[in-house]
Length: 213
Image (cartoon, rainbow, N blue to C red):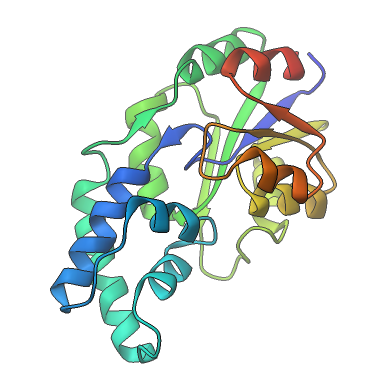
C-alpha cells in the first residue's frame, strides 16, 4: 500500500446522506413558515458544517437569533432521522474491508456535528473505521487542517492520504499537506473538483482502490 492510513470525508464520500439532510432542513424551515429547499439546492449548501447549511437555507435577511432557532430544530429532527434514507455508496463497504485486510488504518473527518458522526459511523461501518472526528468546539472546521491533524495524531499516522468529494475537501488536503483523491459520486461535479486543482479524481470505489494501493 502507498499509505499507512486513509482519511475520509463522510457525507458525499462514504455515505449518501443528502436526502436525510434535505428532509431535516425542510422540516426545520416548515416549522418557521419558511420556503423549503430542493434537493439540488441542499446539495450545493452542504460541505461547511450544519451551521452554514442552515444559514444558506434560510431566507435572506434572517436574523442570527432566528437562524439559531432553525438550527436547533434541524439538529433535533436530524438526530432522530439521520438514518431514514442514508446509505453507503456502492462499493464503499468492500473498499473499507480491503483496506482493513491490508492493515491500513482509516479515519473519518467530517464537518458534520460530532454527535451525529459518532452515532452514524458504527451503524454503517462497524469495525472498519479506527478514528472518527466530527465538528468539535474549539477545533476549526475543514478546510482548516486541524481536524485532519487530530485524526492523524490519533491514528499515529505516518503517510496519510485524504479522500473527499468537494471543493472543501480539495482545500483541506492542500492545507493539511496531504495527497488527495476526490470522488465524483458525491455532492460536487467533476468540473468543480478540477476547478479547485484536484489532481486525482475517481468515478468508482474500484478506481479509488487502485489509486490507494
